[in-house]
Length: 332
Ligand SMILES: NC(=O)c1ccc[n+]([C@@H]2O[C@H](COP(=O)([O-])OP(=O)(O)OC[C@H]3O[C@@H](n4cnc5c(N)ncnc54)[C@H](OP(=O)(O)O)[C@@H]3O)[C@@H](O)[C@H]2O)c1
Image 1: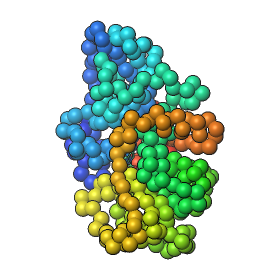
Image 2 (image 1 turned 90 degrees about the vertical axis):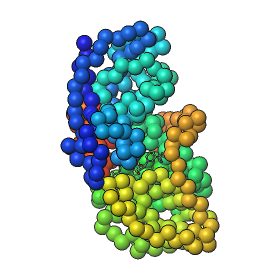
Image 3 (image 1 turned 180 degrees about the vertical axis):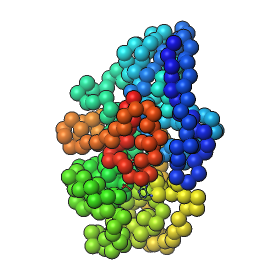
Image 4 (image 1 turned 60 degrees about the horizontal axis):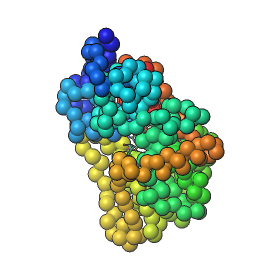
């Protein structure tokens, strides 16, 4: 008999998420039936989308949503060998152990062809959902060209730091914004041309100096007031990839911002939002390219790993206080 742990959403988040919104429960799992297998979580992902999507997808009392990299530790299903690894869907959620029958509701992919020379945790980072997000959100939507000026915020986080590195590979000039001096140094070490602590500068003045000819590409992870300012600096035919709006996720009242409608028209800007899962059919293309860059030493994504399943809330809350550099993961 296996004792499993799980976190349920005890109460919908209201403002900044807090400990009492989540509850840790234990349950005894039954014996496996034919066709079933037992997963043990190794790495669990915490992601900003969990904040807005929990309200859209979950009822109070449901298991908190989220993806995990798990090992098959018992199996009565010939398609899932004991000892093999899988990436689950986010429906599996914050569980230490899960009984599954397979299928696309639970399993996103099996990792039997995962490159042996790449650490497994990268499957949840640079080669995972955030890698796909950076690749398609930047390359497809922003169509970068050599010499163009790129602004990315949330730049020391998972998506932002990959976008900045891809932009460098594509020959762009990259300006990154992150929330501490330590992160600014990190971005410079990654090869960003310019990096700033958005908490201590005047964004408008900074962009006048750092991008005197304007911004060709704005990869937006943050939204709100920050975006209002960057939009004013967009060059003719500029492209804006709306990836996320983390500055707004915990706000009861969203920032009231100027839309600059006429500026969008006059500058002929393209502004496009996207959801990475819409690109699922093309994940193999991004996986192949990112793995190649990674193995050539051109790109990497660090992980901030929190130990212990019990610390899932702490790791999750840390996304909103900027505790992570690179991909935030929990290791069981
Ligand atoms: N469209 C899609 O399909 C898709 C997929 C994945 C992610 N996303 C979005 O992409 C963005 C980045 O996600 P990620 O997984 O890479 O997370 P992440 O950047 O690794 O972590 C979140 C970071 O956001 C910053 N942040 C938190 N609150 C902020 C605020 N009020 N203002 C400015 N920055 C703030 C913090 O860094 P600082 O210390 O720099 O403040 C924090 O480290 C999020 O908006 C997420 O929702 C979208």
